[in-house]
Image (cartoon, rainbow, N blue to C red):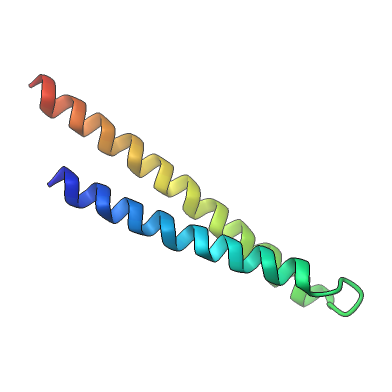
Length: 74
């Protein structure tokens, strides 16, 4: 059970890392002079969403570790 959750968390982490790399590459490739404020806001919002996903994965891994420790010492 815990192994399946851990593999799922790793998969989500990989997807979030790829999303972060895509957003970072798009942001650096586009010249800032050609972007309007709506485009800049959209890119910043996408980056913020990816950061929130990283935080959720971190919380999930901490909870997974806690449940693993509880089951070991039970």
